[in-house]
Length: 354
Image (cartoon, rainbow, N blue to C red):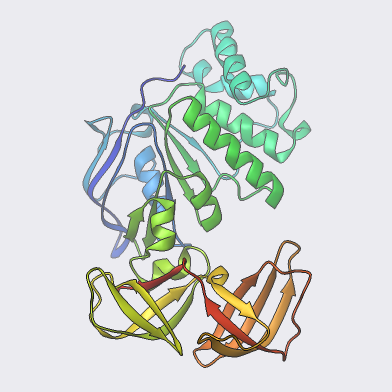
């Protein structure tokens, strides 16, 4: 069984390469036994942050604590963390068992004991009986599990994942991310997980740290980030969002009337003053109607249509500009050029603070 889970804390951490700040004054805490995802576009600083936790990069400023212990100046070998790399980095000439036993063996553990530890972790990741196989004889998902077993075998305080699913196809990605989440919960592991895939982050995380331009844009639970984005960047990056202009009326408690074209909705004002505002509307919150409804609606015309099996995706030209719509009515597809009306749902519409 793994050791007691440990926290990870960054206190005003920066990492500079010359005049360029890859990570700039970043502070956060990963609670023991939780899975926290660092999410953001390429170059935002998320992988550098992960490498700072691992000790593969040294902070230019600030403090890094693991389990309450200051590890800022400690090497990777002194930090009691393990990392699963994007490439898996398995030794091709070694068997599965030898790959997993490698860490304990080079740490001085007797070979028989190292193999026993490796077999235990292979059983944990569902690869019992795969001892004698070579990495080339495994599927991508099985190779990923070997990499996880190898990271787990030393029972680290913190487990780190760097884009662990990027080499897998879509169906396998879903299955392996569920495996990782199940393992994290079963073993009560503290996990820092890097991805640029928003759906992946929403699916596996207790909390998500969204990064942009070397700083933290927003931190929160997946639902909070999706439903209450703190900025235009977050609203657009976490899932798809239609950003439209609207008019915010006088505050009434924590809500206010918001005019979106001809449609008025009562929304939480989120501290935004009355006047022109930006509103984020999720594609599934735009309700397609083929005929003019009795209630006010947005008028539009289908510009593009795509069939994706479980749903239709439409681009609709409206008075607010082009909007992206997801519709489950695959049995009644609309063709480009068709006039439509759009209602607004009760969820997935939020005022975005400037």
